[in-house]
Image 1: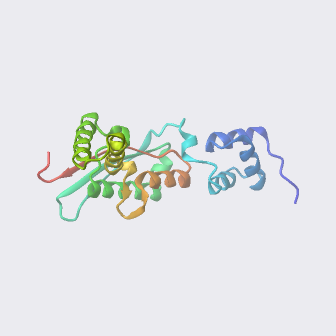
Image 2: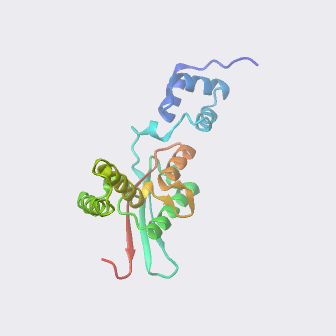
Image 3: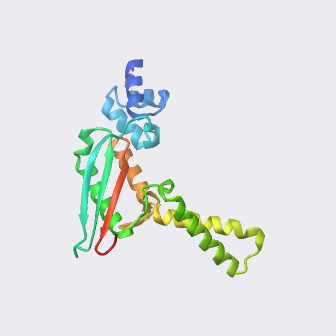
Length: 201
C-alpha cells in the first residue's frame, strides 16, 4: 500500500485539535490515509490526545443540569463546561452532567477541586487531627506526617473531583470527566455546583 503524503498544514491542524506531538500527528494521519477525523480517533485510542494537553483551550460552552432526589428532600445544580456548543448538545456530555449532579446530591462535596476547600475549614480539621494524634500518644517525630495524611484524606473525601463516584467506586469523578474529555475530544470541566437539602442553610 502506497504511503499517503501528509501536508505540514494538516499535521499542524491535527496538532491544534488534539494537543498531540508533531510526529504523533504525522503518523496518525498517515495511518488514517489523510482523514483528519480518523487520525484524531487514532490518537485518542492511543491515549496521546489527552485532555491535559488541551488546557489552552477555553471551556466556555456547556450546560446547567439539575437533579432532585426521589424523596424531594435533596437536590443539586451543576454547571459542566466544554469548548463547543456541538459537544454540549451530545448525549454523552449531557449524561455526564446528570451523573455528576446525582453524585453531588449524594456525596455532599464542599468544593470542585482540592484547592476549593476553604482555608478556615482546613485549619479546623488540622486542629482536630493534631488533638487526635496527641491523644493517641503517637511519637512526636511522626505526628506532623500523620496529621498531613489525615488532612489529605479529608480533602480527597470532600472535593468533588477527588471523590469516588457514587455509582462506581473504582473511579473518581475527576477520572470520569477526564475519560469524557478523551472520548469527546474537548476540555471538559465542572465549573461549579450547588447542593440543597431540606432544613440546611
